[in-house]
Image 1 (tube, rainbow, N blue to C red):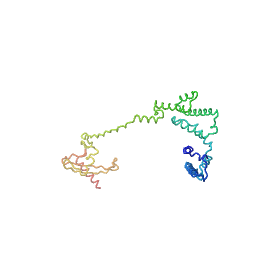
Image 2 (cartoon, rainbow, N blue to C red; image 1 turned 60 degrees about the vertical axis):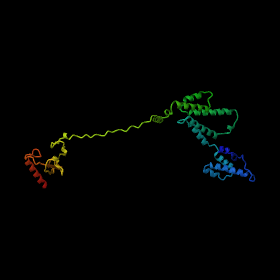
Image 3 (cartoon, rainbow, N blue to C red; image 1 turned 45 degrees about the vertical axis):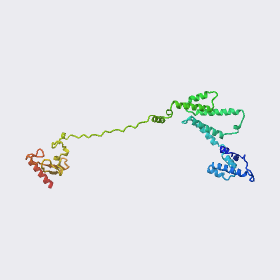
Image 4 (cartoon, helix red, strand yellow; image 1 turned 120 degrees about the vertical axis):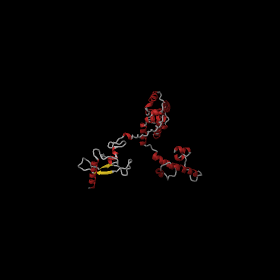
Length: 315
């Protein structure tokens, strides 16, 4: 605020150097206009709570005096916080420029809050006190550096007289840039940055899609298959019509055939025959009398068996 008012040549309205003229003076209207303009600058720069406490002041000097009495005193807690932050500040992941700017900001803030009458002293020991203060700042700056600059730090401490803070900063800044040129920063940070460097340097090409060949279904040769019941080639025993019966509407290829389906219900006393079994009889017209579809039975025995089964089904 002081810098802004000084640039507009209005600093005299808050320090009292521009005295308020009498109301009969021809300069009163000009002074009143400038005074109101400075009041608006001050109130707009305050928070709403603080601005309400000074909104009824008539002059900019009275507002500045009230604010200076409330908030212009040195706060011991704030000074302690700045010193504590200075003690715990180190370079860490910061570069040299960011680390130096952070320390310099804290030094300036602490020096402004701890300003005393001794700062305006012009005696001979003042130069020695200033030199000691600069040396303390130099040591604090070197202490917080990372271990990669241990060699440069040792050289700085062995120099007599010790270099200034600005000279040390320039030397370290050049050393940092030299390290960046000699070895890329990708290898001096962490594994994540190193992996990112490899990814950018050698991008991975996507793998081509896998080509899957279609499975070939091999057809089996029916001529090699023989039914174990009817001995007919190209037929399976689990689908043998002579064993399980012909389906309804089956068309015969060799002359006319008579199909007789007989359903036999198994009895519990017989060895586990619980399911019904269909026995199909399909005698051909040219078969002999002694031939039968069931091996071991003659045609007469087969006929008697069929009649017995039919009577059993009817009952």
